[in-house]
Length: 163
Image (tube, rainbow, N blue to C red; front, top):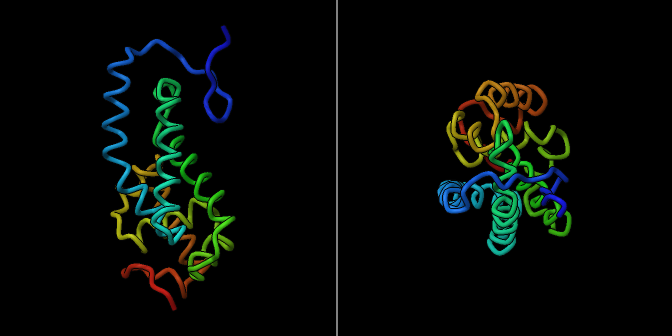
């Protein structure tokens, strides 16, 4: 029987006790669902669309949980899936937020995500880093790059606002 594959084609392992895996996933989903939903809502401007994106992401994570647990940073893998889901839904959505449209058009995704999480949604730097599965220094560097590229949109102290 061929191994199961993750969304990006990696084989999964069946070495983890399914009960423990389900408990681990349940804890991960409970911790991250509200934060993922805030991010998706900011990007998509629709509660229904953001809920669907988060659910699709978590279903994918659940289906590939054992493979994810074998990765160096499972949070980074799930974040990439969330970003893909948002991008797919966002292509069909009307651009309702011109500030976000500029951010994602002019900055790398990681930098734009850092701005959204830290400046728009008010996440502390360490929490944004945890959510994206990166080091806090990577978020700090992304925010600095965003401030240099788009100083009129990325204010150092205050949350991001429409201009």
